[in-house]
Image (cartoon, rainbow, N blue to C red; front, side, top):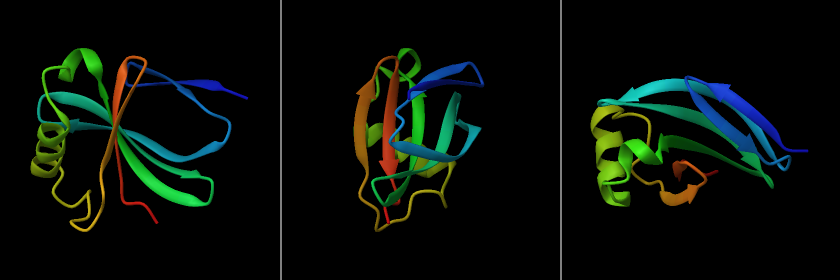
Length: 97
């Protein structure tokens, strides 16, 4: 089943294979983003979700640096960070374990 989530003006479609553990709205500089903790196929991880319309001018490295600057304890220094675009959102995924 796919369901839609409405939080802080975000409308997200989540796959049934992904269990969302927690979702909160945060500010990353001037941007409102969602922070999600999730479980997928036995892997736990986290995502920062940006609106594409807000951040289209920023690349992956700029989004990571912006996130680390404004949320310094969120992304572990040893964490790989993946980047993807789905529908109207850009996802930074990190802290996999």
